[in-house]
Length: 457
Ligand SMILES: *Cc1c(COP(=O)(O)O)cnc(C)c1O
Image (cartoon, rainbow, N blue to C red; front, side, top):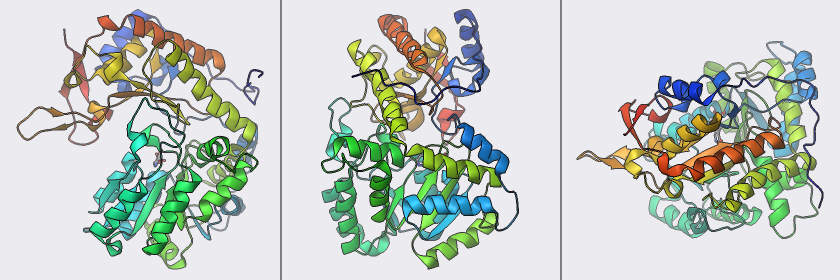
């Protein structure tokens, strides 16, 4: 097989600012060993997130110029609405400024005390919006999804037996909806199979519970279905997406992911009454229904991005570039979640830095080491992000200590990725010299964004 090339050429470039290891040691100190506090111009390869960091196409930039900024009834809205409807088949399409704004509106209406929302895995903003409403979020990930190093094709699937049991336990009337996240971001970017979505839908129908899709990475998920699920090899990703959404009663989406936009999102539903309630809230918090929280130009960029993302040459390159980095690390004996997900590589820091106890945040120590060695910025998904304190004091660690390297879409080339692999391998060879960290300051919620740390000597 020939090399899979980037399916684009580059018309406009942004410089990367080089710095020395000595400078990076200083920047890290100034950022209190928290890469969220490092200025991005001091980062060489930024793999903090794939959200809002995509490169837009020349067509999208042209759309930005064409964007019509009329307050009401803008043609840019109708372009956006028509495109979202073609893919999702939803009747009512509501633009929002990003994914979490859709969640806030949806769960303000359907949530509240005594309600339960069931998912394969809720993303952290989704869970936060559910809990903020007074309701509870329940993750029912399938068994294979919980085993990081054992490969399986659809590790994002929901456990359907557990779903049946939870419906019996909590009562269908207390479950306003089930929400399937595709791909499963918090669970390693792993895909969900069409069969699983159909099975969940069947259970939902039997119990009169609507099924929603958190569609941030729907195209990446549909491409995995095409590659891995029987009966889909000859279908287009567009057709697969249409089928996937045909089982849903609604969806939320962050356009900062699979729509290649720098901002934006939407909420789409089939039920008119629910749509009306959502629009009423939208007007208070986001804006008039034909622009939501967005400018007309953003609606154009999203509409064009949604058409581009189902292109299979793009998706082949996208999925392959994550796998390429993952394979290089596996070949060097570095522990990563397997198989590679759709948007990121996840390193198992507990194994990578086996000499650092979880109470000293091995994931964060690894994130710092990657920055120091090569200016590569990733993010800890472990006990700094999810750890809690026991009442008697002492850390209750997260289930896993991971470092996520999220790859922005269409932004880096193969040589950038080769460089990232070289840095990780170099850090791995010298891992014994890495020390753990202690927290010196932290916020009561979502502490990983602002926490300050220091090395333990
Ligand atoms: C990013 C993300 C969201 C939230 O979207 P924002 O645009 O960041 O508000 C929700 N769900 C998943 C799965 C995501 O990845």
